[in-house]
Image (tube, rainbow, N blue to C red; front, side, top):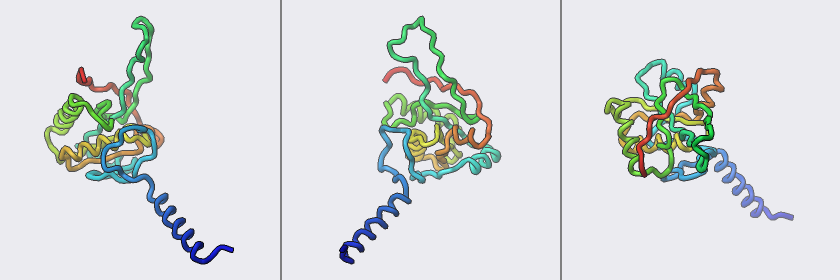
Length: 186
């Protein structure tokens, strides 16, 4: 026979576990450093989460900077130079600026400076301009990039966790994209 105190403890534990599970993934204090394709939090400190219908409406109003942070494909190491390499083309939300690798958890100084410069250029130095960050669904890289932009002082940061695949799933158009050239070196 199970005592009432044990039943109460089990019920409290189950309730606490259920609350934690319902709350989902918690935001980390810092940046996500690995396992970028994993369940993501429902919030972003310093920014706002936006989903497909709201993003579509925001884009119709205009004056929005869309930034795709998906890493660009790289030629496999060890592949002979005379061997053909045909990476899968990236298709993203039309009008996006593709800044590969700025969503990694740790950035080199050159990539971080490049990211800051590209943000300043794309917003015409206006830290109140709306900026939307995305990559693919369930991708921490867009969360990292949005968080980083908020830390740089941008005031209207949006994170679109549905990503380009969520946009396409909603029946909206995608366009073939080319990544912005990245800085050379470390």
